[in-house]
Amino acid sequence: MKHHINGAELYIAEKGQGAPVILLHGFPLDHRMWQAQVEALSDNYRVITPDLRGMGHSDVPKANISIEQYADDILTMMDKMDIQKAALGGFSMGGYVAFALLRKAPKRFTGLLLANTRPEADGLEARKNRMNMASALYDKGASAARDAMLPKLLTEQTAKDQPGLVESLSAVMASMPAEGLVHASLAMAFRSDSVDLLGAISVPTLVIAGEKDLIAPPDVMKKMADAIPGASFHAIPEASHLAPMEKPEAFNALLFEFLKGVTA
Ligand code: MLT
Image 1 (cartoon, rainbow, N blue to C red):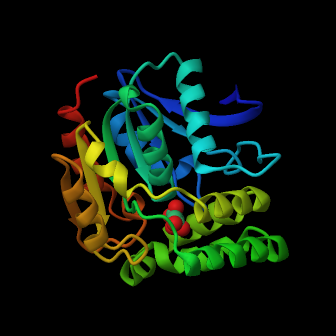
Image 2 (cartoon, rainbow, N blue to C red):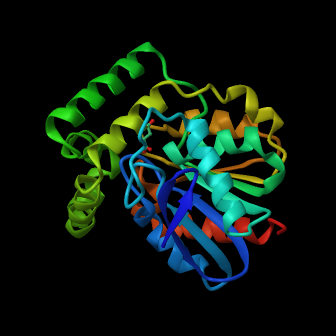
């Protein structure tokens, strides 16, 4: 359902009852990437999966937007939905937004899932690639992001075994508003470095990597987990970047066990 948030209509999916769990999607995706987690958790939790501004069914920003502003949207969403505290999960770009939320309002989160994400800001080369992506998005539409990202999201084996998954991902990515993805690319290019935040994270934290993820490699994620007090780290075998969709059973088992230990 759509909610009016900070001057825009944002799409927020919600299922189940219980302690709230907010899951933030990656680029160039939307709430649909969490379908398997919603199904697994919603018998026990109130699972909230928003479309970040400019992606999925949410309005495209009218002016440039930062990762901090995506985080502000989530805090306003929590106020509007009467959620004082929630467990928070972020996948990749959603992880960048989760870091911003932990900086802005650490007391509003009871636990943290960091999936296939990394704390460092972009270097010059990565920024340049994002500029090229923004330009390609204007030239070719959302298919530019789909064509660049799709081969990196799943292992070769998964792509071979699950053509239906490849097809549905391709359709989701091609359906994104191109200009919303331009905003997301620029926001990621100029995001803050979150390495300094890691030692100050004081909520229980679960870090999940894909053993074959080249975007957020397991060694980078292990280093991140080691810097977060008490965090647990798991690398899912035979998973690439999109571990929550590629290996939902393994991912959900870790998440479910983790959430049991997170107090509302
Ligand atoms: C994502 O999956 O959200 C992106 O790979 C993040 C990024 O490009 O840094």
